[in-house]
Length: 142
Image (cartoon, rainbow, N blue to C red; front, side):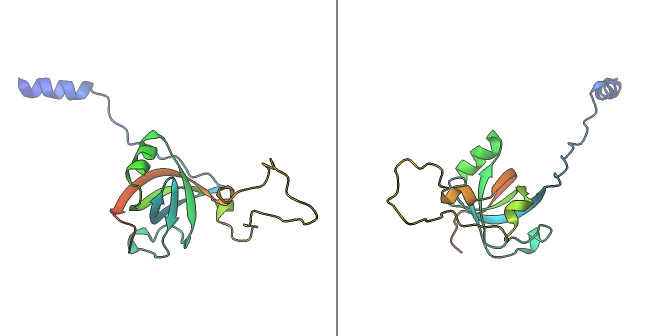
């Protein structure tokens, strides 16, 4: 009798469908990188692990991390730790051919206060939309 009740109860439960992963946009690439967290900035290490061979090699780079609330909370917990991060980055942000310097100097006068249009160093840091983060080590030192 109990087996019949359990079978009926299981038959009434909605079937769980596997979570669908969103396709990667054509102008972006999914990366799995290892690096050190400092605030919302991830500085990758110039070492390629055998467990992340499926991701394109990006060398030593810096990424500004974005994510939903759960990811942001995990980033806050993992400060100054070595982490593995999976996320999307625009392909154009990985292109080394673009101009990466931020300041242009034109002589002929003194600087004027309030010139907010000059870019800062943070403006040139590629943004990674993080989908997963995992601790690799409690310290960033090798």
